[in-house]
Image 1: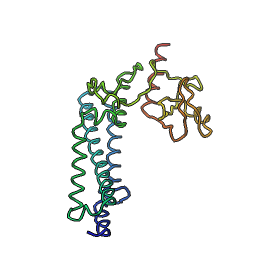
Image 2: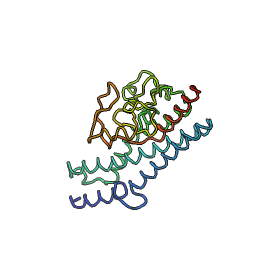
Image 3: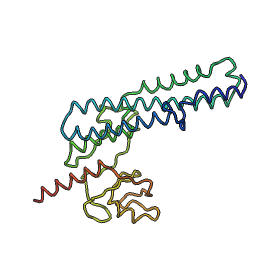
Length: 250
């Protein structure tokens, strides 16, 4: 197989897998479909938790895990193509009597087997979408401002190496709904993805020039506009916290 033939075969193999393809079986299209479905599951979880429908929550939990599995398979397909491309560029003579499709299939099988052998915590416990799913349910079921627990709580993970890879969730011991800048209850929150602290949107944006240090005492995270995002779940949680505070004062 010549280098030109090898390149042509590799391009054909990756045509429907790599980002940028516009047809319906492209990587981009499938990934977007999965991400959109995950967002819908999280929104449904909010409603199910609000009406205390545990059966529905169990179904949604299974559903989001299946979606995350599908997303991981897509990512591993892309990784397999990238690995194959690297192998061919390193030593073309290794491919004289081998089918690119067979080599790709072998690479993918090894990657998917490694993924499937992981525990449930290893598959989902540090995935941002699954953390958001659990966080959404937790805050709807614990409106008193209870701390969101470590993700390993949901998997009964004991002393394993996977604990070391647990996600960092920064929450104060007592949920404070006041902005560290205005010292007033937050109405329009914006969340820092750098440190998970949140602020009144207008207040923190006015402080950026174009960056600033997080105004929470003791936090040294440096903020910029791209690291700040509006969070519908956080806004709902803050609103509920304010409602509870108003009832206590009445």
